[in-house]
Length: 285
Ligand SMILES: [Zn+2]
Image 1 (tube, rainbow, N blue to C red):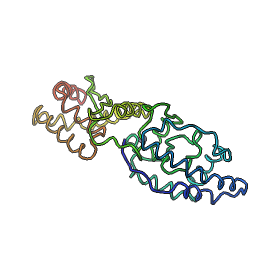
Image 2: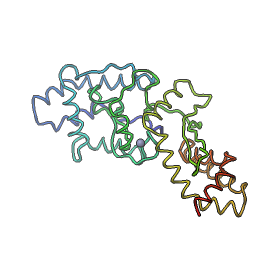
Image 3: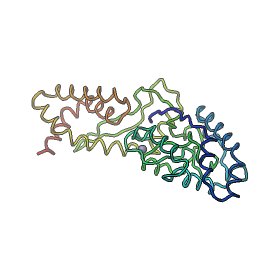
Image 4: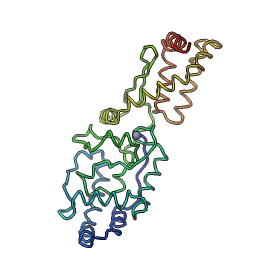
């Protein structure tokens, strides 16, 4: 859930740019007729997203009874997402804002733009920059066409939502052989209750627990040689101190990455620093 700030492209200008290349003159005329509706819908969307009330927006089958959802979806695909199309520069500029990493999961590489509100139900927002969020293939796939029906069903919107830097991602060590990590959302006391509910919904929607658990298992495997060596040379205190410095370093980069939560959980787990490591040793043999 990484905040990116709001893109500044004017939605009507972007829409008209996409429409420029439409060859069917009757369709083009209908597109031009709804340009004011596109601008108005974008304004309402921005104000509603800023207020955390996207669940209150009504679905539409078309734009002002003139342009169908299918026609808007084609406009997005052919005139914005397609390489070399008139709107592709806007598409690329939006993708670049994520600096390569999906802001929804904070881990996988960005590969597409995801409609925060699906274009099938909100066709007037099909090419609106503030409704187009850079995402990885998995996050795009998990959300599909889900729309929020109530406040707590709103997933994080990287352009409008900023849940701050306080730690909210929690990991705990599962005392298994081999040891594993279990992730969950633990909202800070300073958060309004709705943020906690939304963060939990976001976490479930994008299956972040599964993603982070898998990454952590791999990281633990890579660390096992180092930690076992440390245990031999510097004892349990040496292991704990190493884990804490690693946590501090990761937290400087991102207090809510799976790595920060993982190193904190390992360093704080008496079981991991003693028994858990013994189990790693038996696996390493
Ligand atoms: Zn993602």
